[in-house]
Length: 279
Image (cartoon, rainbow, N blue to C red; front, side, top):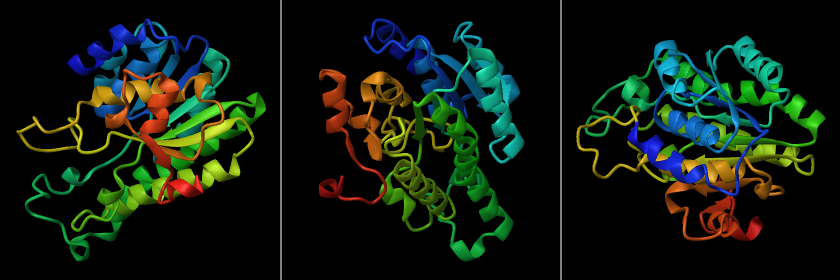
């Protein structure tokens, strides 16, 4: 994937090299997850790459090197999330970073949902439940499994991939918007409850529609390159981000010309719906 290779070459020389760091990334077989798992691996982290699509996952992980382990897992299954954490500890001795990325989007309901919006009263309750199970409860399950290990270590990172705030309340965007809003609210609460423990919780979003399988359509020219997720994620996964928590990072606005801490400051705001002066 061109997006990933373009990022790898410059991250290998980064001062934020992540040797000794163990990470879990869900939804790692494609899209943003593939890019983020590859970025962490390229920066020296050991990565448990998880997805429900085994064949796609195996193909992706084969290009990441020996430090990456593919695991077929479903975020709707509590035992699978516990198994991911146990596997990470068994393979790498610890779990430092979890990237809650796996998700289901509106195109799974209707490919032309932009031009032919879905009304909430047309939705089946079980379909809505599925979105909440993946997009909201999935991150809860993984964080719940990982945090006790992180607290024992006195250090850890939870990175939540949600969506643009406007997307959460966009007309015709139910149940995706509400499910991602729930994920963001969960991240804000986790950040508050973990404050001062050494475990941080932050949100990372592309900053608009990204060129991934979740976004339908043939004209991809206006879509955001998924590679933008790499630099801010690597910084968040590093010791350089110690003490930074309850923030929302817009990857599109990360400026590679700046020192990472300044780039992070300029592309972030308070998590969820907070105001800058409250942060």
